[in-house]
Image 1 (cartoon, rainbow, N blue to C red):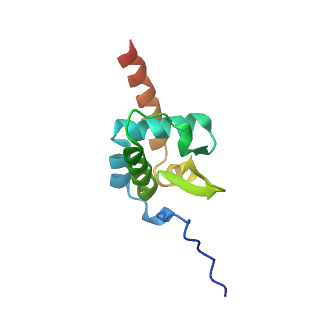
Image 2: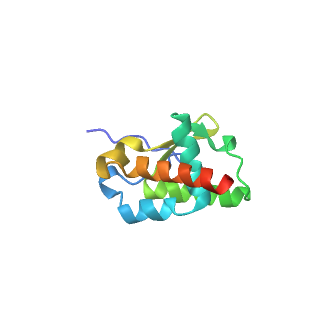
Length: 116
């Protein structure tokens, strides 16, 4: 049996069975993190960290991505020099059916209401 090669650039992610509802809800309770997930979900594909124009410092942006990754909401992988991000929709939908869609829909309705 061979052990997979782990690079120093591999980022730790919880396994599907380790994802906890409390951690997901905590991660998505922050407006910036919810914004990141909304943008990723709308893109339907991976986006690099540099694609996000958040009104916070780079170190705070890094913190938000780390919280999302460690909670199991997103997966981050290096592709060349870019750190790519994608929503772990299959895992989240499998564990908490309908939760992600309900949260994204509620966030979209709130955004419309607050912009009005």
